[in-house]
Image (cartoon, rainbow, N blue to C red; front, side, top):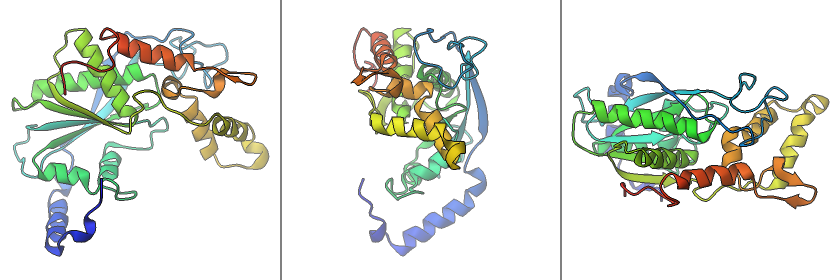
Length: 292
């Protein structure tokens, strides 16, 4: 998306800033907790428990990074013209890959407004100016099994459909891993005849066919992680290692350092298992049928 910040008038910038100040207290209608009870449990061979108790398998009581319920929170950022206190034109935004819980709902909105490099060119505010209510979903664990956060999104979609004060269909947006979480959620709902009322789904920078991180880089991070104390390295290395070995990363990476046999890099079975299951929900199709 090409930035046009340089061409905006001083007056428009002033008005935008003034509205931001006026709506500062109403930036979020609330920070609401949401929990989805999940019947999905990982098979023992689905992902490797790199950071778990030795000998524990995913889904067992000895696995500290395995949950039977996904939890998170969502915040509502109403359109600038929406003073009704209700949701009228919803856009649900599913968080991306965030295993270290770096981003909050407000942080995701800031990213969409270009807080890092202006690549989105004030996107969140522009959508709100156009009358859309933004609902941001922030997972408590953005690195756990994708299925679990997808069930959390299912519950949020159902909640928004039950509470919005209009017949306007939902727009569902997934950024990075959020595009995969959204795709799984929609596939699951259609496979189980659960109405989602999503009229438009789009994903941005999502690994719809899998992700790639060079195996040499994965091995380097592992080596550095094993030598943090020896060389006095930053704990950020540990965060990076936890990210690469998180359940969600194992499900998205086509090749993973845990599945190297000598000099042979085998396709990651956690990746093939997850993507085949996601497509299998709707008869092997790549994407859901009842949304654009």
